[in-house]
Every structure is written in C-alpha cells, then in structure tokens.
Amino acid sequence: MKYNDRRWSVDIDGSEFIAETSGRQFKCTFEILHDFGGYTSYADLAFYNLSEDTANRAFKRGKSLSFRAGYVESVDTIFVGTIRNVIRDRRGPDTITRVICRGGKLTDEQTQINETLGNGTAVTDVIRSCGGALGYPIVMDDTQFSDLELYIYGPTLQGDPRVLLDKLAYTHKFDYIIENDKLVIVRKGSYREGTVNVISQLTGMEGIPEITEVGADVVTRLNPKIRIGGRFRIDSTLKRYNFSNLYFRDIPESAGQGEYNIFRIAYTGDTWGDAWSNKITGIRGTS
Image 1: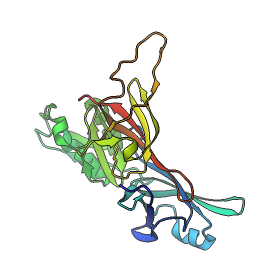
Image 2: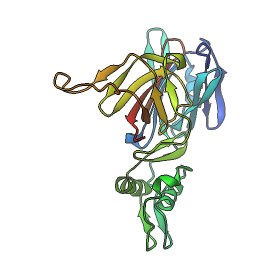
Image 3: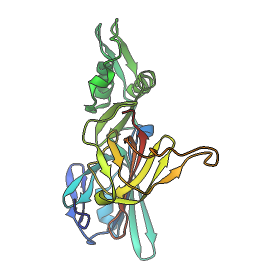
Image 4: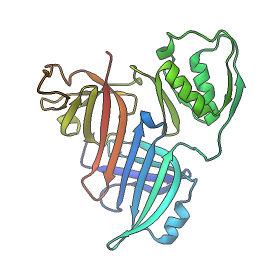
C-alpha cells in the first residue's frame, strides 16, 4: 500500500459535501474513536475557514455524517454517525467549525421493544431482535454462540433494547458497538472474521509497540481496513514493555508474540500536518 497520497471525503445526509481530495487543498483535523467499552463511536472533526453561511447550511444537529479516509490504494469509511453539536471557534487568523458526532442514528427519544419470541429461540435471535429495534443490521458470527442452550420458553422482550443488550452482553460475555451504522457483536475471546493484520515497519507501523500484561498498543499509518473486533499481529524486534513489578519478575521471551483481538481503534488526522494514523489497542487472543 502506498503511504504518500492521503485521501479523504465527507458526506452529509447522503450527499457529497467534500469530494475525495488529497494534498493540502483544504484543512481538516479529526479524532475518531471506536471502543467496545463505549457502545457507540465518536468523532470530533474540525473544518478550517468555512464561511459562516456554508457551515450553517451544512452542519445541523441531527444530520447524518459519513467520513472516509485512507491512502490512494485504500480508502474506506471510518465513521458514520449523527451530528450532535457544532462549535464555531477562532485560532489566530483561522476560523474553525468543530463538528461533534456520535455513531449511528441515535436519537434522544427512547427506543422501545415489545416482542415475544418462540420456544427454542437462540441467544443470537434475541440479539438480532434488539438490534432490529434499534434500527441496525447485525454483524455477528452465530457460531461463537453455539455453546449456549436454546430458550426452552419463548423470551419476552420489553423495554429499552439497549438495556436488554447490556444484560445479554454481561450474561453471555460479548462486546458490541455501533460501527459505521452497523451493530457489531463479538464474543469475548473470539474475533471478527477476516485476515490477520500484520503490523510492522513495512506495513506502516509508527514508533515502537507497547506490550502490556493483557495485550498491546501500536500505532500505524491510517488503515481503514483494520476493523474493531478483528485481529492483528506485531512483527517488530523492538518493543516497549509496560509490566508491573519489573524488578521482581521475568519478562518471558515470548512476550509480544501471537495475535491480538482489536478492542479499540483511535483515528487521528490532520490534512495539513503529520498526523494520519490509527492507534490500535488489542487484547491477547486465546489462540
């Protein structure tokens, strides 16, 4: 993949707002977070020197916003969500329009579900009913739940589907997040289907990976193909270790080896600066 031709674009309510562009034609900075611990994803975008009229017409609370970024050979959507707040600011000669978004099509109105499923219902069917009530397609591998017994009696689902999902996630040990208008479900200890991303100096790794007692943090050039719930493997002879009690324990030679399940991805970019990367937090896989 080439790392010398950045590309990005913005759509609002399904219409092109900023066409796919490269280089320094327009200044935009962004911070985007996908985190299994937070249910939804977040975006903090800053557009420089838009006219007040353009900003007011484009960015209205409740509008949907889609942000694509990457490099010329690999551009994809890294955020889809709803505009929550718009803040106008000034730094020196620059006027900044800051757009705060959260993932998905969430509204302030509380969504309700009132549904009774049949006898012999699988847990995955209950999850899909909750996802359907929220209005999202499900990304889930049913085989990850094959060890769970079916409901002998048909479960009744009443109330806020997000509350029901939280209870299901706790009981049946899975993580979920709204990612690009999809509800992604991954069982703890499992991973999203797809290739294992190899993170090395040849694939855009920045700096030195940090190995922790439970996983690893690594920064790489922005790669939209790396998805939360997927897997990565670090290929680096240099590593930084963040272990407790280093004076009283030995770091195993195998530390840092193996595959990691992606728990968090933080995208950072500046179309006029050096930042154009994603920081990946992984938990050591079971295989």
